[in-house]
Length: 368
Ligand SMILES: NC(=O)c1ccc[n+]([C@@H]2O[C@H](COP(=O)([O-])OP(=O)(O)OC[C@H]3O[C@@H](n4cnc5c(N)ncnc54)[C@H](OP(=O)(O)O)[C@@H]3O)[C@@H](O)[C@H]2O)c1
Image (cartoon, rainbow, N blue to C red):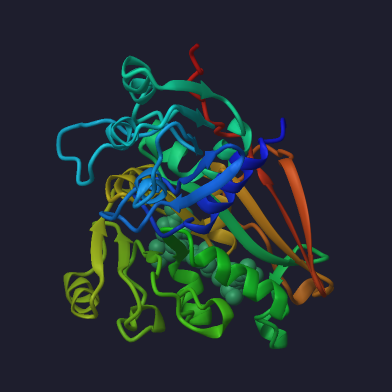
């Protein structure tokens, strides 16, 4: 991966700082530079607020400066809530714009607009890093489907817990903190009814022990209507969607709705609800990223359906033996190896993460 220039690197850091707070807008960073000196740094504000470029240009004399942007500046389109950044850049008198990545939603029109107004534009500085940072946005923009991460904690002998032996938590504090940091940026967390019934999890994001300001939508797969309305997942702290099948009882649906959740009826499938339909429905609700924290049944179904883009395996240095529950139950699928693997020590546990390769961003090509 070619390294970004130092100013683009700074813009990428600004973009990363806004991760998870801007959806369905992409998290973008911008850095304004003149004569080698940074004049301003901007990052996308929460949805409806100013974009990164507008933030970097606000209140600064930007004439003859260079603006580094991690994503192509936007153009006017119908229904747009914020003023187009390409116009703001032109009006501010910026001489040159360096863009990491073209936005599939803008499709090169931002570059064209800037060049037509006499602004110099270069595309591609830090492109690979920007694409990696924006995988959820690019996935959703290019396919209409959310970017999906399968997260699980597993013992050295491939078990996710041993409830009969009183072991339901496998990982330590550092791993748990890492999980909450991820929950705090994704749009949704998904589990099956089995996990709610067994563990009664709250499924909220609590980085540093305190509830995050923005909570992910909690999605429960419950084809038969087994989850009780007093489960912790229905406690205040974010939206809840319960995906069910036509067979679940009307009275149960009414009680779940009264508990504050949205009931989503999907077609039945062999393992429960139709997952393909589910992810389309989530994408249509502007959910760009989902962490699947389900048990062995949901995980196996998701892998078998080719739904997973990224895996986060928290490996705990324990042996649970035959009393333990195996990581995957149910549908068989083709073996595969993760790509772009990264290993993070989170003592006493280890996080192994990587991409499944089922989807890779197809990046619009820079034009000269
Ligand atoms: N270590 C870990 O990371 C971890 C994480 C989570 C859970 N766990 C453990 O896993 C155990 C629970 O396992 P589990 O397999 O029962 O939980 P699960 O995978 O979360 O839930 C399974 C249930 O989800 C429902 N479902 C609906 N649509 C589905 C679909 N398309 N595919 C698959 N399932 C679908 C099914 O019930 P309906 O027919 O009622 O819809 C199914 O029985 C507990 O012991 C828990 O502690 C461990």
